[in-house]
Every structure is written in structure tokens, then in C-alpha cells.
Length: 509
Image (cartoon, rainbow, N blue to C red; front, top):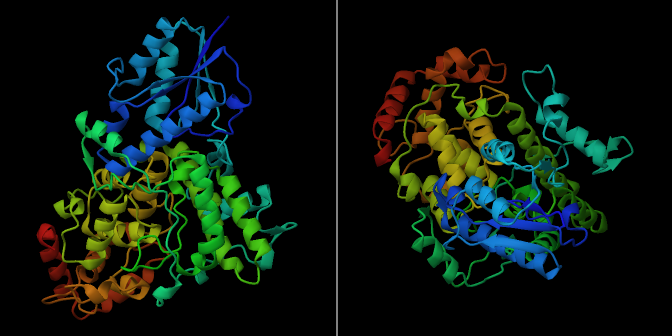
């Protein structure tokens, strides 16, 4: 019998893939826990545990369905910890006559698997993951000849192609986008609901990771690890979101508060990025929930959520494959500062940053506005090197895989791409952070002061950023007002001096 070795990566846990439609003894499925994957960046301990536990659950499900699975744990003696070595060895030992893999979503793995395939003495074939709404090349073809890839244009096309929130050829309620209604600060904590959790003991997994010498960051409750690590648990999270959180999601998706780390967010990003759930099934489930409860749930709640998935998520993947590997080297502003050490501890006097970083270390999670307008905003204003930014975001968040991380950080957050993803830099003074929540009320710095003792660093750094990048930004039609305001400031020199002082002592802020 001709046998085929099929590789399944740790973020390819899609039980609905056509590979698994029927059992066949000629196929052997390979899954690997490897130092190659734990060590290319310093990951959060919860991220490592979530992937390994999800992989093991997936392998068990395949075996239960009758598939043959070769699974190598991180601490197995015969695990060589490298994808190339393991595939080469197993092909020879197992006398496999062909090798197949699903297309990886990271450029480095894509290149590695192409090299591996070319080195084998047997036929090798790549297939799609059957997960995303578009193919890798779709976005580049869709925007062919355009300098800027406008997400809204792409998003509308996805809505039409998949008949999502549509009435014929027009959007339901006559609007494509309800973003203006999705920016409220949370004033009433009584609206909050506890998240759906799946506590499980992971003592042995954590001990294995530490025993192997894997360097990690962050904290973990080894007796009650709460992230979903099986398709069943992921579906329960999806149902809980639709039934309990969707009603307020859109209103408060941008809210910043010390009251709760998750607010009305779904906690589904890891479930989707590991492919235990597909984006289309999530979107359709949410749309159906809204249609059945329109008297309680407004369309703005639903559209805001769907836009994140078939808009931003799918769009960011398209950017990644259109622009890599060059995208990973872009540094439009020439930023070169290192991250302050307190990004790894949360020990800063700035409450918004202290809270967001501490939460990230405790939960391996922060929502998109915490990432974009708190940590990302500060990194951009402070001139942190994009490489430093990428490493931090890629390591600390449970849902961070390069295809979605680097496009959001180097692109949207840091504007290091010079405007491929966004039409302007996402920066703000303290006013935005104050408006969106309660961080400023607990802070050692005054959000209303630009200079002097206790002046919020965001205020002076904001104007310093525009001043030092005038040659790159002044002609941007979305930024002209900022320069007109800056030039009229009577205390401009004092504000810039304040920012210079803060930049000299970032470690002390």
C-alpha cells in the first residue's frame, strides 16, 4: 500500500477540512510540538499551553474518528525539535511514498516547507487550509495598481460575495458601516457579564514547558486555565457571546476600563486563529442570532463584530501575503528606540499602560483598542523600533500569529509601512484615552496637563511626534489640521522640551 505522510501545524486544527471526511489507512497525520516553534519569539506561557493542549485534543479527536496520527510531544527523546529534521527522518523510517501539507499562514513556515518539499525524494503537495474566505492572492489582485489598500472597499465586497447583512445588492438598513456608533465609554458596570470559562488543570503541561527550558513571559493559573482548547469549548464560547454579550458588543468595543478585561468581546480570536472555528461559521451564527433577536440587539452591535472578522481579519491576511517578506522590514519613520523594561512588568506610573500591560501578562489578552490606542499609541509616539514592537505583540498575546500580528502592529499601529494599511497614523493625546474610559482617574499623571510636573506624557509626545515627522506627514490630507494647530501654539517650544525630557527617561515614566 502506498502511504502518505500529512503534516498538520499547530494552527491548523480544522476538523471540517476535507482531509478528514473519511478515514483511510494510507494516510498518516503528523503533529509536532517543537522548540522551533516555542523559541522563534518569547511567547506567553498561556499561549504555549493553549496551542499544545489544543493540538493534543485535536489529535485525540482524529484518533477517535479512526485516523492514524503520529504525535510528538515537546519532551519526547525522539523529537528533534525541528520541522525539517523530523519530516526527513519520518519519511525514511515510515517508508512514505508522498508528503502533503496544508499551506501555512506564516511566511517563514511557507518558505521552510517549500525547501523541505524540494529536498525530499518523494512527491510533495500543498493544499489549502479551507478556512479563510479568500485565497492568499485575492487582496493583491483586488487592489492591483493601487498604492493604498482601502479596507472598507474590500469589506463591502466580502459582504456582497457571502451575502452577509445584505438585502439583495444593498446593505441591510442602508448603511455599510456603523463604526461611528461603536465608540462609547462604559459608564455602568452593571451591564457587564462574566465570561464563559472552561477551567482545567494544566500543571503537567506547564512543568513540561519549564523543564524543557523554554523561555516564556506572563502568568498562568495552572489549576484553572480558562481558554477554550477544543472545538466543543469554542462553540460554547460562540454561543455564549451571541446569547449574552452581542447585545452590547458594538457600543462598547472601544471602551477602556479597569473594571473587566474582556468587556463584551467574544474571546474567539484564538479559536479562529487556531482554526478550531471558521470565520464564516462565526459570522453566520452571529448574523442568525441578530435576526432572531432584532428587538433586543441593534444592527450596529452585529455589524461592528462582523466587520472585525470579514473586514479586518481577512484584509490583514491579504496584506500579509501581498507584501511579505519586505513588509517585515518597513520602518517609515526610522524609529530606533528600545522598549522600556516596564513593558515586560507593567511597572509604570502611567495607569493606562500599567493596566493594559499587567492585564496582558495575566490574561495573554487585551482588546483591540488597548493594543492600538494604549500600548501601540505609546510605542509610536515614543519612536520604538518596529522590530521591538513586533516581538512584544507576537509573544504576549494568545491569538498572535505573524500573519495577523505584523500587519496590525507594523502596519495599522505603527504606520511603519508608510500608509499601506492605514491612511494616517493612529496616534492620540491623553484626551482620547480619558474619553474612552476610567484609566486617567487612577493615574499619577494629569491628562489635562501638557507641561510641568505630572503632565501626561501622551500630551507632549503627541505633538513631538508630529513635529519631528513634519516632512513625512504634513502633506497627508487627513493630518493638515494637526500642523495648523501645532504652529499656532504659543507654548510649542515648552511642549517639545517636555517631550524631549520624557524621551530621555522612558524607563522612569
